[in-house]
Image (tube, rainbow, N blue to C red; front, top):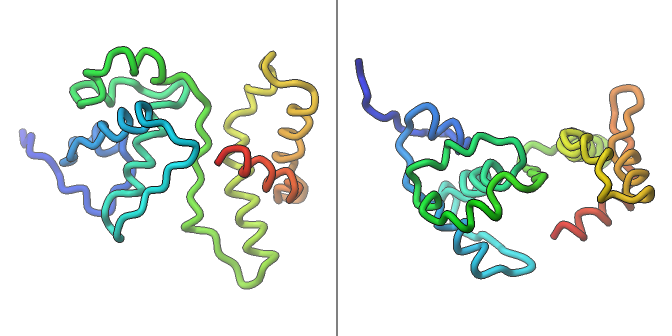
Length: 167
């Protein structure tokens, strides 16, 4: 049996890298740095092919509710017990990549963006049952995931307002 690690050429999925035994340079200390040096906005600027997407993809399974925590076993972040207890698997995480959004005109590009946003937000429909959302927030959520004829009908001001709050 061959236990050699594979080269992760083109692999941008953190969990896949770990679970399928790809080479991985442990960058989980980025999570520690982000949590200890908290800023309202963090900008990651690096040249192409420097691991920005993979680093962003690593944050989602760390923070998101219901994800497999075992992927972090043996990595540097697992040594930070207090941070892991406080933050790992505790939050709904909306992760959106704009890489695939394109269109022949503004309308088709807008619809593609609505689809990406609506699909991601829809994963969190269980939050509409949460006591932490008031009636107005539930109504806004419902407006963002409304579908007609296969298209999300998110109102532009709701989408723009929500992303302004998230940033």
